[in-house]
Length: 226
Length: 351
Image: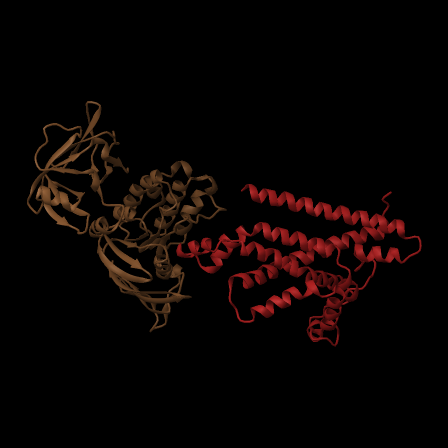
C-alpha cells in the first residue's frame, strides 16, 4: 500500500520543482545552442558540439564533481558566486544546476533533430519574401520544430526527475532542502526496514514519469492537428 | 527594367559562367536539366554567392565582387516562385499569402491582397490549411505570396513542372494576368519550350553552364522544328466561337476556322501541330478536312528532311512542316500560292 511520510511528500515536491526549473532555465540556451549548431557556421562549432554533448557520455558523478570544482569557494567561479552572495553548493540551486547540466544534451539533441528536419527551402522562401533572420527564427523555425522542442523538454524533465549522481555531489542529500525522489530512495535502501518506503517512492516515480509522457503525447497530438 | 548580370560560380565539377543584359519585360531561360538554370536563379535571388562578377538591377548593384557588395535576399526584393511552391506548412493560405506583404514597407506596396486574391481566384481557399490544397492551388498561392511581396523582378523556377497538363494550362492565364496587371518583369526558367513560348517573348538558351544563344522565342521554336523531334506547334488565340452545325466556328484574322472543340468564353488558346497542316497546290474538289485556307508562302526555312513553311493566310500566320520532296513537287518558295488543309479535330485546346 502506498504510504508516504511528510518527508517523502517534500521530496516529491522538490523533485518536480527542480525538474521544472532545470527544464525551463535550459530551454532558451538549448534552443540557442541547437540553432548555432544547425544554422550557422561559427568558428569553434565542433568545440561547442563537444561541450554540449559531454555530459551525455560522462558519468554524472564526474559532472557533479566538475561542477563542485567550478562553483566551490576556491573554484573558477568561486569569486563570482561569493561576490553575488549566493550559495550553490548544498542548496536547491545546486540541484537545479546539476539537473540542468546533465539534461542539457538531451534537450539540444531533440531540438537539433527538429531543426535539421526543416526543409531549407522554407527558409529560402522566407528570405526572398523579405524576412530577416530573427523574423525567420520566430515565424518559421520555432513553430516548425515545436514538437521537437516539446520532446526535448519531456526528455529533459524526465531525466531531471531521475538525476542522482551529479546532484548528490553538488547539492548533497539534505531532507527538505535538496533531497529529491532518487536521493530519498537511496536513503531508504540504506536504512534497515526501509524497503517498503523505497517501493512507495518508486511507484510515485513511475506514476510521475507516466504523467509526463501522457501530457507530452497529448500536446504533440494537438500540434499535429493544426 | 535593366538587369545586368555577369557572374561566375564553380560548384564541384560544374562551372557556371554567364553574362547578359536584359531589358525585355518577359524573358525565358531555357535549357536541359543540369545546364545551370537553377544555380543562376539562386545566384540572382541572393541565395547563393557567386565566385566573382556583378549583378545590377536598374542601376542598383545587388552583387559586386570588386566593391564587396552582396545584398541579402531580403534586401534584393527579387521575388521567387519555386518549383515546389514551398508554402509554409504551419500557416493557412491567408497567412502564407500575406507573409511577404506584411514585410514590405508601406511605400513599396503596389498591389493589395484583395486584388491578388481576386485575380488568382483564391477567395474560397483563404482559411484552408496548405496541406489540403491541390498542386495547382498551391502554385497559385505561391504566386500570390510572391507578387504581394511587391518584388522588382520575379524569378520563376520551373513553376509548372510537376503539374499535370490540364492544371498547367489553367494556371498560365493567371500568371500572365497577374504579371500584366502589376507590371512586374519576369525571368521564367523552364526546360519546356511550350511553357517558355506561352510565358515569354525572349529567351536565353543555356547549356552546360554557358549561355549558348539569345533569341526571340518564336525563332527558338522554329529552330527546334528543324532540330528537335517534337516539331513545331502553332499557337492560335481564338475568341469565343459560334455554333456551326455540330462543329464550332472561330474567327481568326480575316477568316473562319472550323473546330471540333466548343472552347470557352473569352480568349481560347489552341495548339495546332505543324505536321497537321497539309498543303495543296490547288483547291481540292472535295475533302474530309473542314478547313481549307488559301495562303501565300511567306518564308521557307530549315534543311535536311524537315522543312518549315510559313504561310500568310488572310491576316494570320501558320507554320506547316513538310518534307523536301513535297517542296519540290509543289514548287514551294516565297510567294507561292497554296491551300492549307486542316482537319477540324487537329486543334488541341490548351486553355
